[in-house]
Length: 538
Image (cartoon, rainbow, N blue to C red; front, side, top):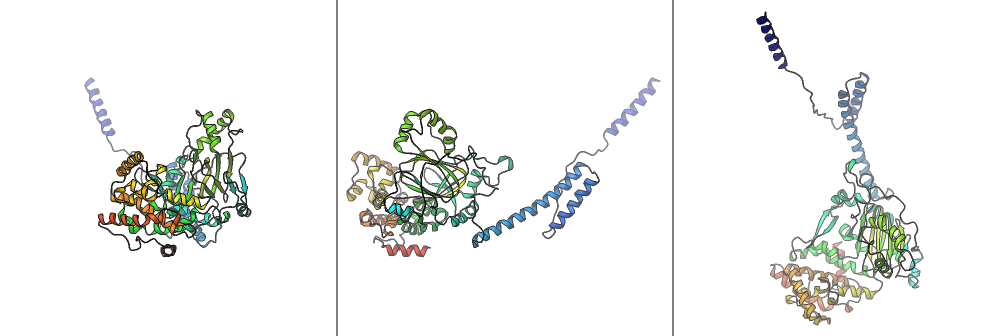
């Protein structure tokens, strides 16, 4: 009947509802831990491999095979990482003992940036000398210092430098930092962070940097003393004692910087006084990944650059020829990194604007490890790292007169208009009086200029701490002079400013509730005193 059919339907429906609510297994993911004792890794690896082979032979499910394979990979990976650490430690120990050959690259494959394509400069038109012949040519006046040149084996102790300066050694030196210039002071980025940002330290496979657009602004220049204080005594013997007048000042400066901790409380608390003084050195390290390099520029003073690791491509022009190029190619020649210059601009400049012609000549060359390149101060130049590179850079002076002029310009040079460098001596006088400074040193400030510069100095150096930093800069400069017997201190401003600067620094210290250390007195230090201080710090 109809009633019977409805009752039967109701029973079936009820059973279906009960069945649908019964407990059911769902897809699940399990995270399981595997503990391996430190002495059981080999056994665990062998047993896990046997389990994997058994699972594959029995044609177990893909998920089960994947589970066992993950265990194999984890154990195997841990063992390989351990072996790599042992090899790295053994290599580091061998380098300390000098048993191993010097490294031939700046970075290992884990952090290196892929080299740029191509061989760089197609030809080299820069004069080359050997380190054997160039000292005699210097003595005979046969080296043209108005043009760049290369000393082919000019980097002294190349093998030792290659051992001492690699990415690995820089990262293990906790005092190594890369400065980022800010408005008031330097902010230091750890070298480890630098290799993460500009190289491939700890980079994931899909995010590894390629040389070029990823690295074009990564070249760094750091005062050598910030990386290795002992470099104050390094000498490029290949130059035969020539061009090294600036380096005569380094021992005295270094000795003063080493004792800067005694004066730290006299300057701004955020400023590392020792590091600030070391940055005034004439010695630097320049390094960066493949594809890095600064834009076309002038250094302002001549320098030599000795490549320790890598390969660089150089481009240089005289000021006269570059000015002609700027006029003719003003729409093409825009500020750009070295990578963009070589990649996009140079070919167009050659083909469409006559670069390389009689009135727009240029020098170019590739620099290889061991080669020392000399660049005149007024030369417009750029260089591009074709592979990860590291070099030693040193400003040079062509004569004693240049050294004397540079020292004086860092103390008092109102004609330069350089704030604060050209006016630092004023901080050694009451109320930072520019006109009194000019009168004492025989180089007056123009009244209008003095009024403007005075306002600027008062605005940026209003406190005893900020002015003390300028005073310390002057004392460091003069300490370099007094520590160099070959430099005639009497021809610098130092004898006339030393007592004033020490006296004003003492007053500033008193206003801060401090005092000067016993070694810093108004009496001019002798070369023997500075040399003894340098030996004591070492």
